[in-house]
Structures are given as C-alpha cells and as structure tokens.
Length: 420
Image (cartoon, rainbow, N blue to C red; front, side, top):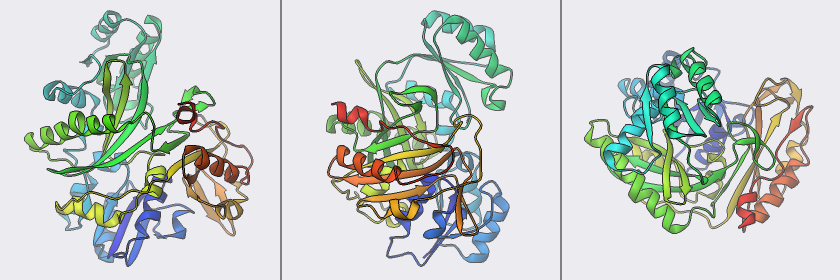
C-alpha cells in the first residue's frame, strides 16, 4: 500500500516512524517532510499548503491512503479535496474540523450536549466582551475563535490586561481568527490531553498524555507549542479516562453525527482537572504535538491498520505497551520568539544509539552531509522506560549528547508525574 503523509514537524516524524513499521506498507511518501522523516519515507518537496500540487502528486503516484496530520490543512478542507479526487484519506472533513476551527462552535456544542466546560459568551464587538469579562472577574480567558497557530488564547490577570487583549484581537492581532472571540471563566486545575479515534459513529480511546506548554523550568515564561510531554499521565486515572470517553468524546461524536457532520479521524480532548471534576478546555482535530511523539512509541498495534479502520468504519480496540514514554523538545535560542536558523547539529547518531531512545525531528533540514536547525522547536528527544523516571533519565542522557549553537531545553519534563 502506498501512503502519503502531509506535514513536516515532530508529530509527522512520529507518525511516519510508526507508519513505516506496518506490514501493509509498500511505500511511504511525506510532503514536505524533514531531515528525520527522510530516514523512513521519501520526502516530496511540495508545501503542505499547496492542495492542488498534493492532489496531482497523489493521483499520479496512485496513493492508496493519505494521512493529513495538521489542523490548517484539515480546517481548510484538504480531506474533502482528496476524497473528491478518489484518494482515501484520514479525516476529518472540513465541516467536522470546525471542532478545531471554531472555539465558539465547540462551546455551543458543549452547552447543547451537556458537556462540562467553563462559563462563556461569544462576541463580535469589543465593548460587550469587556463588560462580560468584568462580570466574570479576574483572571479571565480571552480566545480568538479561529486558528491562530497555537497562540490565540490570552489569560488576562486584570481588567487592563483583559481590555488590551480584547482590543488586540479585534484590531487584527491574530488576523481574521480574532474577528470573533470567546470570553470565558478561568479554570483552576491540572491540564491533561486525551485522544480518541472515530469512524464517524464508533470511537475508541487512543490514550492520554500530559505536556509542558511554558518555555521555562517550573512552568514559567511564555506559552509555546509544547516543550515536552509524557505518557501515561498519572493525573489521568482509569476513572478519568472513562469519564473522558463517556462524558466528553462519545457525546461529541454523537452530536456531530446528529448535525450531519460526522467526525472521522483523531480527536484531541484538552481537559482541565478541576475541584469540580474534569472540564473541557478545547478540542483539536488531530494528534497533539508533542503528545504524538510519546503515544507512537507506546502503540503496539499497527498504526496504518488503525487509521484505515477509522476511514472504513471497521474500528477495533488497540493494544498498547506498558512502558512509559517521555519526550524533551530541544529548541533554538529565542523560541517562542525570533530565533537563528542554519546551525549544524552534532551528536544525533550517538544519542540515537542509547537504550530506548528515538529522536523525532521537527525543524531540521539536510544540507550536504550536515543536519541543521531551521525551526524554533528542532528535535523531540524521546525515550521509553519502565516508568516516567527511567524514560526521563534516558531522554536527558540523549539530550546531553546533542549540540548546536543556541540549543536549549527544559530540564524538568515529567516533574508533575514524578512529584505524585
């Protein structure tokens, strides 16, 4: 079977790594890929945003199945284009991807389906939004309705910060994504990620993880796309995982089907574990990044077979390894702000030979004989072990062998799990 994976980050490398192990695979392509993905797939120099070129390539190459890994392509309707051209693909459709494309839609769906979430209102003008924020008290959460590259949420600690955030969004700070906003109450608790796989009617769990969003040790500094993750997450007890499926995932899949927009594909549930119980933070229409990098090493079942089953409506429970997995993001100095590109990375081969270690590339490029850093998040140094502590020790042993000018990482990934 010929498979096309669309994307180029650490999540895509983890997916390519897992797909490459499938007995049914005859050829794996990735567009555009990166230097790490090139080790397990043939990279095709087509941007993930060029839907026409991707479709032309898939048809000419006679791709049997396409995996669309990232939210911008799903929200923009690449699944619909592929399927319309006769290319079987892992969804969701453009209509169903509204679960990630509109935060306001998700909040309304929660209200309709009785899914626990923070109190909120939606706004298309600043003044009523400011009045509602005042009524909630501070801190308060301001969200751009649409996609904003993971940066569309501002937690305002005061009225001044809240007013500034609301004005920023309506003045185009997040482009058109902030022309409509959601203002919601601030939830206190511990966040966790839970994943499921749906065929539009049936749904199975894909397990849980916990990531570290802030750039600095001790969860300090600005939010990022994620500086590390681990799975399983002790905060997600068996009872909480069951609640995730019964109180959140299943009602959502049923509600989407009832609306005539069945959800097929991976569904990412962001949970806040509050004193009142779990509440929904957000939905994403794909695997998380870097959560995917710790889920794939734990997956015992054939990933390609599982994703095909979702597309074909033949889902069956998956098998998982007992080992824990932990990933440390190595980033370029300056991230999540501006950063330098083009520095040569050393130590990759040596680090990759350590027991239980797999290195997933995010922002890398091959130039001659060298692999260079070209992104903010550059590498996901991942390790498995009998528990979080062993996985953490192995991951940092590998991190310590890797070098490039300006490289940095957090040194405390997994601290919440080890503190319990």
